[in-house]
Image (cartoon, rainbow, N blue to C red):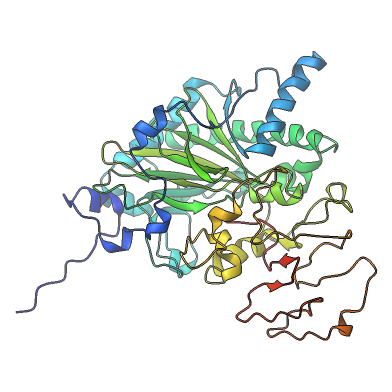
Length: 455
């Protein structure tokens, strides 16, 4: 007798409420991705070890230059060393934030059948609306979360038809919160610009300004999980955005990969978590960090987070290090790409050994793992030796086609090292690597992916 195959519910919430004690294999992460996962509530209480910095923004606009600059320096330091921070006294009222949380929580309290009315259609490219993560092509694993995703600013780029109608407060409160986050982003961009020695409006202009910078909100809903030690709410990644602002319901779950270890972020009352994204990291030539992070789950409490991603326009702007951030001693770490190209590079090169760091596929036999790439170095760069370009004699920066140029501009044809797949010749040791892997010299490793680019 053939036993009936019971389909897995399409929503994680339904699966979690079905009473299962063992999660389906599609949600079980590879062992190498599970390092550092313990009891998240106990981890959050620990005071020893490194802690995500808390930045008080009360004096960010102070008329007292000394007080104002002290605030700016603290924010810059956190952006350089961590790339993530808790923002307090950020200027957004507790009352508004509470309303945002109540509205989002009320929507996810609706029956799944009601939420399905807002379902997106990822297969057709429609990602806005209610959804769940589809399996990726690299490992086929799923994430333990459902979500609601939509553009919330500028107003003329929103599609209110897909916004939840229940509760009634959802549209007005989310709209107001988005406006205030946009204003906060302007202040943060100004401080980061000044920290690079630029005019205060420079970074904001480079990411699209008030007209073209998009604010995309994703409400993440992480149901209780019967085997949290085997699952991830969100796999390890860096944000492609310029900045990301996050609220949560005070249930721990965010972990950051810092100095070679996973650090659990504490739940700081009345704070907003802010991430530096890939976009700012690229524009700053790696001076500001886009940190590797992930979301873990638990079996005791539902966790909800509200993330607003501040993203540049997909095609209008070429992302590359600003000229002021590039010197002979600090050559460009990143090739020029549009934002769309950067996203595609991260999404579709997951099986490429050279891009493992971007997709955070922790493979036992792949020493290009994201964990390695995101470990901080002594020189405050989180680029590890496996994919860093070790440049001697003031060599030119690596470009997308992997051309090694000597200081004296020797002709590489003299070495006549031919590579497959249209890769450039590499001088010195004539080491061939197949399958689009990096060209390796005796003293230099150069990647297709610019040094430390992720998500």
